[in-house]
Length: 239
Image 1 (cartoon, rainbow, N blue to C red):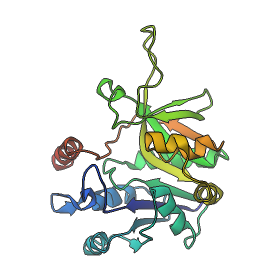
Image 2: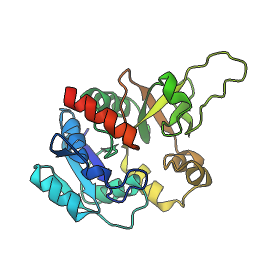
Image 3: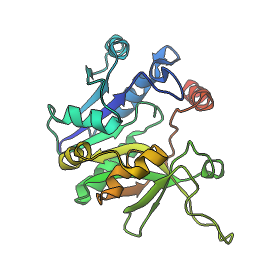
Image 4: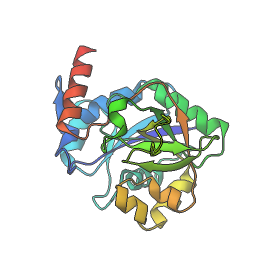
C-alpha cells in the first residue's frame, strides 16, 4: 500500500503567529515535525506542503522535502488534496505541522487501520488527561463500538451528567485519507458544525463520510498556544 505523508504548513496561523518557524534548538517547529514523521519506515514519501516562501526556504536549509501550494486553501485537508493531484498513492497521511511529538508508532497504527479496513478516513485517539477534558484547545472524540467517530468537539464529550466517570478520548492531529475522500471533501461547502467548532473533520461527518479512530497509548501535543510551545520545547530539549 503506497503511503505518502503530507505536512500542511501555513505561515499565517492566528492563535500563535508564525509558529511553524518558531525555533527549538536551532530547528523550526515544522522541521521537527518532518523529522518525526520521517522516522516511520512505512512511508514512501514525506512532503511539507506550504503557502510560504519563508517556510520553503527553511525547509531547504534543513534538507526537508517541501513544495509550494496555493494560498487560497482554507484547511490543511485542502492542501493535502492538492498534493494528491500530482503525487499518486493509495493512502495519504495528513500530519498537522504543529505536532512535533508525533511518533513512528502513531503512523504504524494508522497505516494498519487503513490496511485492515476500507475506511475512507482514519485518525487516532488516546485517553484524555484530566486537564485536557475541559480544555477547548484539546479536541475530544467519541466513537461507536466499531471505532467509527460519532462526533469531535472542543467541549467535554460525553457530558458527565450523573457523575458516572465516562471515558474521555483526546483526538490527535493525524489523519489518513483515500483519494476519493479527499476529492469529496473539497467538493463540499464548509459545514455548519465545522464552522461552529472550527474543526474541518466535521465536514466529513456532517456529510455522512465515516472517520474511524484507532486508539493509541501514545499522546501528542499540538502547538496552539505559548504554553504548548514552552511544554514542547522543554520535552524536545530534554530528549
